[in-house]
Image (cartoon, rainbow, N blue to C red; front, top):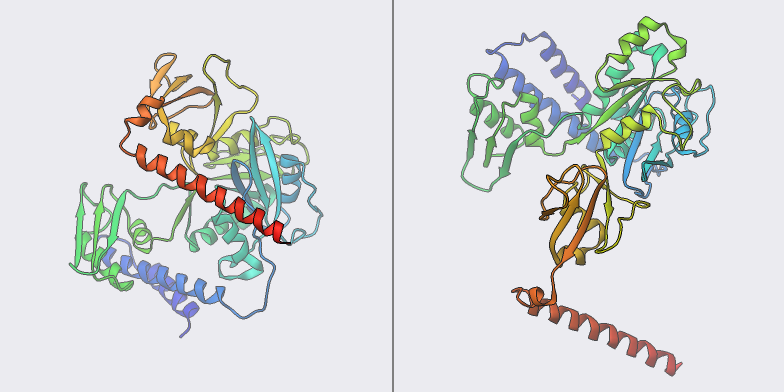
Length: 418
C-alpha cells in the first residue's frame, strides 16, 4: 500500500470516528501518523527524477517579503503591477504567470518585496501544477497575501482549499507557535510536565504525548507545556518543521457580485475586499490605499529615525525594523546599522510613543514604536578600557591590521615579479 492510500485510509477512519474524550487518544495517534506520512510523501516527491526544472529562487531584497498566493486567473499579476509598478504579463486565460516575478512596493519609507507566483490548484502540496515550488517560496516569505476571486468564492470555497494546501506542508496561517519547550535526549525516557491544566489532550496527556513521540521514534525527550495546547499543536511541536506566517486575504473583482455577497466576504477574518480593475481599495504604486496599509500592519514594520548628538533627526531615510525578522528593539536597531555600534553601546535616548518621557534613557532591550527618534550613545574610551574584553578586542584589531598589511605586501611583491 502506497503513502497516498495510507493517507486516504487514515483520513477516512478519522472522519468516521466520533470526537469525544474517549476517542481523543486514538485520534491523536492517527493525526501523528497522518503528519508523518505527509512528510514522507513530500520528501519522496521532492527527490523525484523528473529532470531539471526552473526554480523560483529570488534574492531577498528590501525590508520584508510578501508572497502572492492564489488560484489561476484571480488577478495576482495585475495586483502586483498596481502595488509595485512591475510589468507582469496579465491576460484573461489561466496560468499566464509561469515563474516567480519579483517587484518592490514603496510604502512609508520602506521597501517591501512582492513575489507574483504562478497560480496553484487543489493538490499543489503533492506537486500538482508546480505547487511544491510555489509553496516552498511562500515558506521563505515574511507574510502571505492570498488573492481570491470574489465571484467564484461562494461556490468553489477556494479560501478553504488554499488553507488546507498550506497546512499540509506545515505552514500555519495567523497562528503563534505554542508555548511549549521540547528537547530531544539520548537517554532518560520521556519526561512530560505542564504549568497549566491540559483540557484538550484527553484524560492522560502524558500517555498521548508518549505515543505520538513513538510514531517518530523518539524514546527520550523532555516536554514542558506552558499553555493549554491541542493535539495538532502537540504534533507540530514534536515534528518541529512548522512555520508560522501572518496572512491576509484579498477578495478581488467585487464589482461582479452583489452588495449582500460583499458584506459576507468583508466580515471574514483577516480579509479585505476590493477591485484592481475599478481601483477600489487598490491605488497606483505610489498611492496610499487600504491594501498597502493592511500589508504593512501584518508585516509588523516599524520606522525608526536616527539622530546624532547636537543635530536634528534624519527624517528622510528611516531605518525600517521588522518584528518578524530581527525584532523592533534598540538592539535590533544597532544590529541593523552596525555590529560595532552594538559592541560599543552604552545607552540610547528615545523620543516618541515608546518613551515614558522625552527623552528616555533606555537599554538594548527597550521595544521601539513606529516613528520613534533614537540617539545611540556609545562608550567612552575610558569605559572601553575598563571592559574585561578590552585586551582581546585590541589584540583582534592588531591581528586584523597586520594580516591586511601582510596581504598587501605579498600582492605588491607579486606585481614586481611580473
